[in-house]
Length: 629
Image (cartoon, rainbow, N blue to C red; front, side):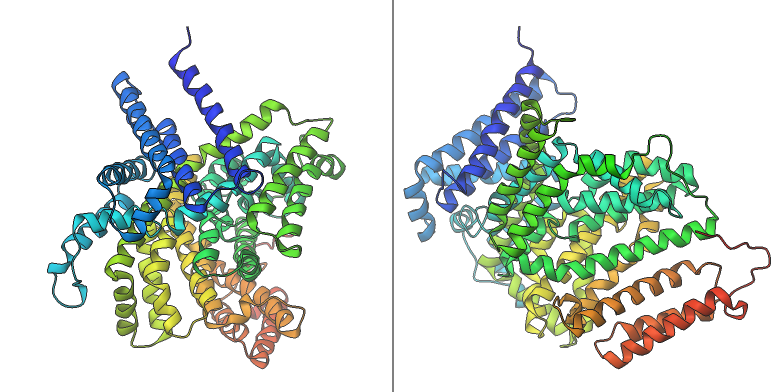
């Protein structure tokens, strides 16, 4: 007799394969109207939520009945709209749904709220419900917060349209994000995680503080594909965190390094996180442009972290971890890495050179993974591996679909009531037309929102409420949106709700708050860089010219100076005046003025040389021995 768990797993496999084929087919052999495709995507995403996230952890009979009842309601609601699609489009455009569609709309909204609660907790559903209540009763409020007032029918019709749950957020999830989730899942199925680890060991195994640098490289590679801070932590952390602890790093530091390096994956091209695709759509900017603009800030983020862990190894006088008996040779690693590099090369070539859409690039890159995997004689990709790729892609689907659908409710209510514009006006007036003060206010709001929300939802809400204010102050649209994306991402390591830090703390078996506080220190670049590229657009400029060259030189100087200032070490301990000089160098080098930057470079070169060679620039080193790399 077929057990329940076996039936559930087989159902997930069949539905996962169908979901993957449907999404690939929409851009190849089975194109659909966009809203109809979004309806399919939301329906399938909600079903996977109820399959992967049962109502009760005990998985009792009553819980199973409730979950399958919700799956049945989801199927009924979604298929009803799909088969009545023509009528649905006409009625949503007029804002007056038929009685059956009103019932379907209410059911769908409740399903979205329950699915989001299961996947993300109560924060985002409560925000969505609050905006609905504001739309219903905000007409009674006095002053700036008041609006004309809307009845329940108008509110439901708005939510159940392309202004609400079928709007931009779920559209980006359906058209772009899911295909890149598939791309990452197929890479993992082909053994990418092992290859990433082998590459990181090969590149950093003989370096000072190599275990921490290994984590940074591995998380950076993996983050380019997954774009999820927590996914990076749980994928690389179980291997790298224990290794860092054994090599001499404290549990707190090891967990923080993993959390910070994993969070960087959300801002690291070429894939970045799901929110980056939403950014491209909302900011009306080609994804290729977003990737190129985000590249230097992301590199600066990792250079700063890399140097901080290097100097921590100096402080702790750590020994080189060595290769170990299990370390592979360059030939062995590269022999396996071809099935990783070729798909990445295909992706980058199509995105950056051929300028195809991200969807087509992802599909061809997936095809390259399968072909390369099948041609690998040592570790061939099997049919079971391909099926696992489909299943793993849908395992990552619930969080994105729930976040985007629920965020769609919020943005729909913002659009209906004009709350987003009121919010922007409030920031402009409170900031007194000062760009810097407005940026600080925006940062605070983003971090507060991000503490309880996933990056995608946090960015969507902030982009709706805050981006217009920043653009009105004269900040370029791409800079404004990247600013918000950074703080939506960096909230993953910002206490009190720092999901990446908490995940790393559980692996390191350390207090989560301690790991979170240390992660803020190590990830300081993530808090400063948004102000840098917003106030100095040269850091988002990529070209073969003197501006790009000077900016890159300044970027390296700024990153190394920041690491020295934070750690208080160069190759030995340095005095407070020297650390303050690092701050002066940062201020000089970070400016767009070439003369100021050049003075900063010269000061840095002199400081670094004297900081190593001349005792009068260092602290008391009588009892310290310099560590050699």
